[in-house]
Image 1 (cartoon, rainbow, N blue to C red):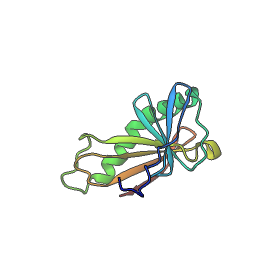
Image 2: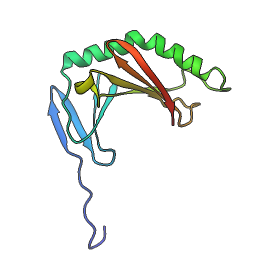
Image 3: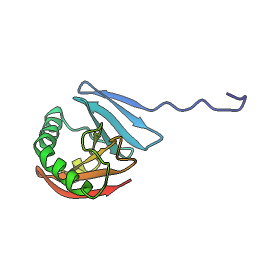
Length: 134
């Protein structure tokens, strides 16, 4: 570091409900991991769902996983060389959870997918919208 350089600011961290929530200054989102799943929420203000609500979210994802996989397979059917089970990951976006009761499951990261990702909007225990992009 130079004489006039500032030390990088550390991300704020909050501990609640046995979780470690960190605000990413670079991404402008809150992030935490619960039961091996990454959660994020954009914005400076965030209301953390209760453990019960997070269990319902994870239960919805598990119940909807076959439908999500089918939609993924249908979306990739014309793409040569794309594999469904090659290291893909999910991330749950809770930005609209408190205001609308919906959350977004971003499915991406497969090694043959490049920078492509697919987002599933889930509300009232059902997939209400799907978006693809990079």
